[in-house]
Amino acid sequence: MTIKATSPEVKQIIDDLQDNVDLPIDLDKIINNEGNIRTRPANYGNKFDGRIEYISDKNIFILYHPKLISPRVRFSIAHELGHFYIPEHRKLLLSGKSHNSKAGFISNKRLEREADEFASHLLVPESYLNELLFKKTFLTLKDLLKLANELQVSATAMTIRYVKMTPEPCAVILSQEGQQKFYLASEEMEYTGFQWRGCKDIPWNSASAKASKNQGSGEVFEEETDSGVWFSKRKRERKIWEEAFPLGYTGLVLTLLSDPSYNG
Ligand SMILES: [Zn+2]
Image (cartoon, rainbow, N blue to C red; front, side, top):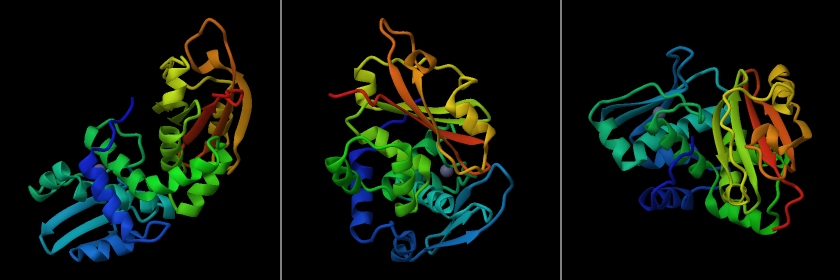
């Protein structure tokens, strides 16, 4: 499932927020500038990453799961800010419709996906990515993990933003317990004819499967593989490069597929 692009109106809101803060994006400053939002840890169970509650115009609370580690807390808070800044979401918020959020691109619900998209755009500024891709268009998953660390953003958000903006053919997959939850291909990947097979299970002998069995290892598993393992069989199969990284002990695996032989 792909996500729809952030609207020009929302992009402008994000640009304005980014203009006033330094990198890594200073969420505390954004929140303090609003004056009526406060953050605090809270726990509403395992299915909960965060929540925004509208009490009154002067009291809006962003709650986040106390056990999440820093980049995920930041993503969760930025996701809740999406529910605050996206005009349609704000209307729902002001009408008292709060909900527990499951951030991080694994929810199928439209509003959750939109808030995730808002968060990734806010935490990984477009100007920053343009500058980076101007110097080097091909990045490995290891490069992206390093950049994610610099920006204090989740590896998933960093990789999705890269795949959306790079002119290289590549694709990102997020899976959980061996089941695919999210897939996004770069424009060039689709243009060069790679068609997603859309299979539910990740291939059993892939680097992604190895990553899934090695949770918490902090290691990137990588190998050359046939394009047919992941994509519809084309007239001519190609060798592609697969890199997979287990996201802590969450059961989630982030996979980047790319075509290093590609030369425009
Ligand atoms: Zn949400």
